[in-house]
Image 1 (cartoon, rainbow, N blue to C red):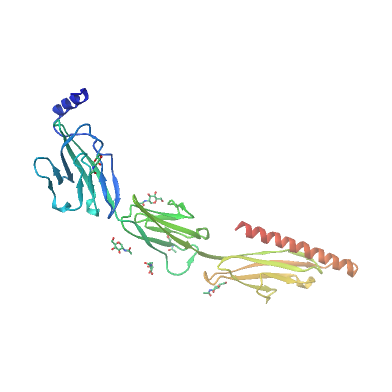
Image 2: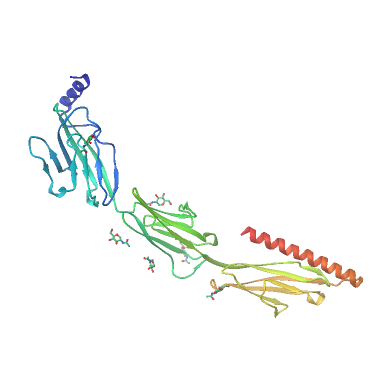
Length: 333
Ligand SMILES: *[C@@H]1O[C@H](CO)[C@@H](O)[C@H](O)[C@H]1NC(C)=O
Ligand SMILES: *[C@@H]1O[C@H](CO)[C@@H](O)[C@H](O)[C@H]1NC(C)=O
Ligand SMILES: *[C@@H]1O[C@H](CO)[C@@H](O)[C@H](O)[C@H]1NC(C)=O
Ligand SMILES: *[C@@H]1O[C@H](CO)[C@@H](O)[C@H](O)[C@H]1NC(C)=O
Ligand SMILES: *[C@@H]1O[C@H](CO)[C@@H](O)[C@H](O)[C@H]1NC(C)=O
Ligand SMILES: *[C@@H]1O[C@H](CO)[C@@H](O)[C@H](O)[C@H]1NC(C)=O
C-alpha cells in the first residue's frame, strides 16, 4: 500500500466511516428551470465500489453491487449515474430540485468518503412593467414608481442613464427595491431610467422615461436705459416644461406673444414697465417678470445721417448682447 493510503486508512479508522472529503467542487451550483445539471466528482485515487446520492437527506440512487441498484421513483427517467466516477446527471430541473446533494463513495479498499454541494434552481427573471403615477408629473410633488417582474427575483436595482441609484434624502427604495419613491421630484429628475431585475442565471432590464413638468421661471434680458431713437429689444425667456405661453404687457396694454419684444426708434414716452407673463398649461403656474425701461431724451441733436448710424450701432450691440445671453442660458441648461 502507498503511504498516503495508509495514512488515509488510519484517519478513517480513528474518525469513523465516511469522513468528509472534497469529492465535489464547492457550490452553490446555479441553474435555470428546465436545464440539466451534472454533479461531477473530483477524480478518485482508486476504483469506486459503491455510490450513494442523497437529496436533503433522502435517497436518490444507490449503487452497491452485487446488490441491485435502487432509485427513488421520483427520479425515474431523470437521473443517470456514472458508475466509474460517481458523477450524477439530473435532467429537467424544477424549483423543487433546489437543495443539498450528498455523495457517499466507497472505494475498493473499503474507505468511505462523503461530500455535499448545494444546487439552486431559478425561474428566469423578466421585468414586465414599470408603473408610474397617473397623469403628468409636476415638480415638488411626490412620485412612486413600481417595477413589476416575474420569475425568481434575487435583486432589483434602479438606474438613471445606466448608473445605479442609491437611496438619498429624496429617493427611497421599498419592497426589496421594487418600489422607488422620489419625494419631492425635481426638474433634474427628468431623464431615462432603467429597472434591472436579476438572479444568478438571468437578468432583465426595462426602460422608462421620466418627464418632470415645471415652471415657468421668467427672466427678461435687454437694456434698462436707452437713448432716444434707439430700438427697444427685450427677450422674455421662461424656463418651463412644457414651453410656456408668453404675453407682453407694456405700460398696462397687451403687446404680443413673441419671446422677443421689439419697438423701433424709441422716444422718452416709451419709458415704463415692460411685463412678461408666462403660463405653463400643465403645472397651471403663471409667473411674471417686469423690466423698468427708461428712454433718455438726447439733448444735442446730431445730423440725421449720424443719428441713423448711432441707432444702427446700438441696435447691433443690443442684438449681439441678447444673442450672447440667450446662448449662455441655453448652454447652462
Ligand atoms: C464517467 O466518468 C469518467 C471520469 O469522469 C469519464 O471518463 C467517462 O466518460 C464517464 N462515463 C460516461 C458514460 O459518461
Ligand atoms: C403596466 O401597468 C399599467 C398600470 O398598472 C397597466 O395599465 C398596463 O396594462 C401594464 N402593462 C403590462 C404590459 O402589463
Ligand atoms: C411628500 O412626502 C413627504 C415625506 O417624504 C411628506 O412630508 C410630504 O407631505 C409629501 N408631499 C405631498 C405633496 O404628498
Ligand atoms: C409569470 O410566471 C408564471 C410562472 O412562472 C407564468 O405562468 C406566467 O405566464 C408568467 N407571466 C408573465 C407575464 O410572464
Ligand atoms: C437594492 O438596491 C441597492 C442599490 O441601490 C443594491 O445595492 C441592493 O442590493 C438592492 N437590494 C435588493 C434586494 O435588490
Ligand atoms: C400645453 O402647451 C403645449 C405647448 O405649449 C401644447 O403642446 C399642449 O398641447 C398643451 N397641453 C394642453 C393640455 O393644453
